[in-house]
Image (cartoon, rainbow, N blue to C red):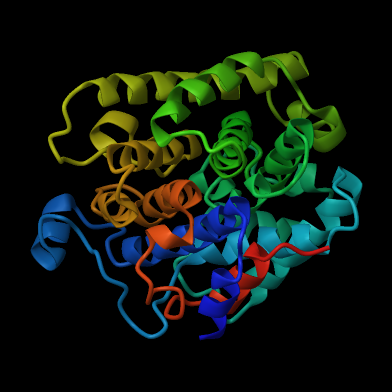
Length: 343
């Protein structure tokens, strides 16, 4: 298979982990697609007590989570340099192409659709964004940022910018940065999954009053905050509180229940991050278990499973996934192309 050949040709660990992360996001998305909006009891009746564990269909279809992650990935791929001025028009175009695509029929989030409608009018993105929204659409698509070979300030700026085009709430910005940072730690630094909650908490504390004006402009003025620092601190504080709940949950024995009981249901950005981390840490040795656990949730199952897949895939690389899955997932050719290093 062409896709398998591309992945098999990757020699160094980082490209294998990058591919594992992108494909893992899509695998989790596909497993969570049919369970979104179901209760855990309903999921168990349909799929058994361990949740869905097999890709269904050829190709196995994904949702807007993977579609928008691809939009971010291709915008970054096409960028001649990583600055707000260079990347924002590319993100805008990719998001608008997604919004108008006939394949945008996977129950897309209303925040993204409303923001894209405003972006299509040519408004500055700081006016087009849905300033009160911190939905998980901000960070479900940010994984490609975490795979870039850039410094941490650029990674943070890109993560917040791609979130900000649609989700202007400071918590959406902060959670997106944390999600991309987690992927970076796993892919480039080989950090263990169990270390992520502590490292992300430290990052949230460190960045609490860092407002990236060169990337965000005067977005903060869409809020009632008195200063940019007050605006962004609200987001980091919410993320820290959710990470604190996650850390407490991980100290207790795992009863196999719904992670959303501890982290929230994942419809908002910081909760999706925490729920996905719970699944990834609890099932650090088995990527399929991790995404199945994410899909077996009463909350935003596809987004939780997608992020869990991005994390465990970044830790294990492509060898962590069943060998036959790469050729069966929707958009496999695009996932493979974005995972392949390019000049």
